[in-house]
Image 1 (cartoon, rainbow, N blue to C red):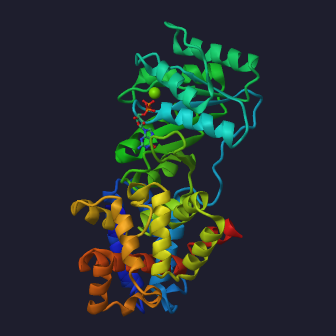
Image 2: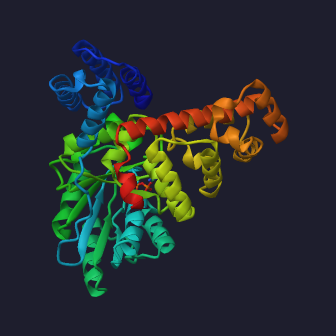
Image 3: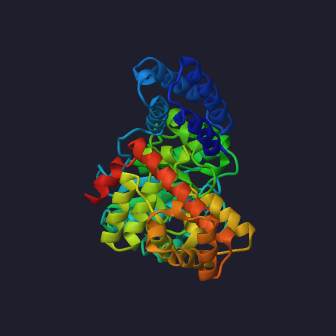
Length: 442
Ligand code: GDP
Ligand code: MG
């Protein structure tokens, strides 16, 4: 996948003490292929490679003491830029209420789920009164689906009137929202399996009667180039204001995200990260760029930790991460937090090294109990060994395995995992990627 491939290229770059122009060009050729294979649109790739090459070759970078790292930093910055840069992509509520937010996209892309997620977010985070209406008369139970989700998030839905057509439902929803003095009206529309004229005509008609402030295109990030084609088809046909990428919890790692901005000219505003109704995040270009570069989503991880664990523990952890210091006691603390945060499945892919570790565990028939084993393994080490894992020779490993009721190979796994995490954290530190982290904890 994209991040594995880029990871390999960048590991090679980082490791070098000096770089020639040709080294950069060679690396960029590989990056180019990796991006194209990850379904990033050709013009986007071209622009990206040109920008990075120019910055890397045309400056003092190659003469610096850490050229490889600087090139990686340039790539990371450029990816961030491509994903929307630093400007916050927030919902626009600047209109006479009810502010209409219209959701569009293909069938199954996640419109209805996202509508309910946004309803919840608008109520809880923005403190606004929202009402939701489904205009999907194509699928039999579509309106019912939104009603059920509305009950779950406790956001009102427009009562269902059987037989009514989408434009009429939109009108009725506007009236109802006004009568109830709602701040926001969310319109969930019907999709199709493919983009066709009937769909576009329906979307235009709905937009005409509801004058939406936001028209959010919902696309499934797992569909890669198809998602980009869909975005292309909607652009210009309906007045899009932003994009929501769903299933960012999957393995896609942002290939589609990279083209979205370029193709639609609109910001990606949210990422859907699961089926649960709170699984939505404001889209953060820097974080997604990091994920694409395979550094693991350490910032997300720390935020999640902060929400679950005690503030002072999180601060200590963040500080260590920021300094690139990370010993086995820290790993143990993280393992405990993982258990609190919902176990391995939740964290795989977020944390450097975890994905491989988890796959290895699954292969050997282990599950979340593995966290307990790892905890026991670290618990069987002396404080000195925990501070200095390099002390762990064969004899010590044997002792620890016996003490924790595990095998030497399990001890090795823990040490390996620690190594990978510590390495990733050092890299992040070098790249200055923890800017946000300091701010997070003051
Ligand atoms: P619609 O046809 O566009 O309205 O799509 P739905 O909202 O009905 O979603 C289709 C399926 O995708 C449902 O099973 C959702 O639970 C699932 N889904 C939606 N968003 C996400 C997401 O961000 N992550 C994951 N894993 N599943 C999602
Ligand atoms: Mg739907």
